[in-house]
Length: 219
Image (tube, rainbow, N blue to C red):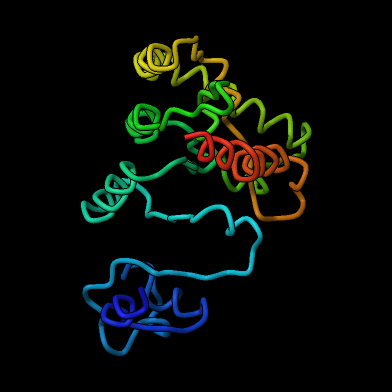
């Protein structure tokens, strides 16, 4: 609705305006800080030329536990999202706040069924980020990432047991801890880890290009 958009827009431009207007105030340098403070801005709508965006809209949210406003934004979208991509840095992957919020996200996942075949957890991606910064001096980086993911899965097992039991009842088939482990991926933008991030990109493509469209058409 263009009229609604025009009535609410504050700024229009290229992605460089995100650097100035879409960061927390304490993370902006004096040179980047707007001359006139902006109040009331809640969302930035970004249009990019990417094939995957013909199938999906991505809503990028602030992390939990920065402040209450950020928490409220994240919790609001939990109730309308078809899938969740949960990001956690490798140096604290699945610890602290992650162990609080992940069970809630699992509990809010939409039930996925494609041609009468159920796809539990296919709309959940738990991503270990910044893996390019992991030292590869003593062993291959891929091996280190797998160790991090496996250790994290073991650590959260007692925390997610209840929501996996609930998912099992909803789907009418076992939704197991091993299935949850397979929803964990390593990722970084750096091309040095292209082999590590390939599994995440492959699964996201499968979800966007196959599972989600067929699940939607089957409703």
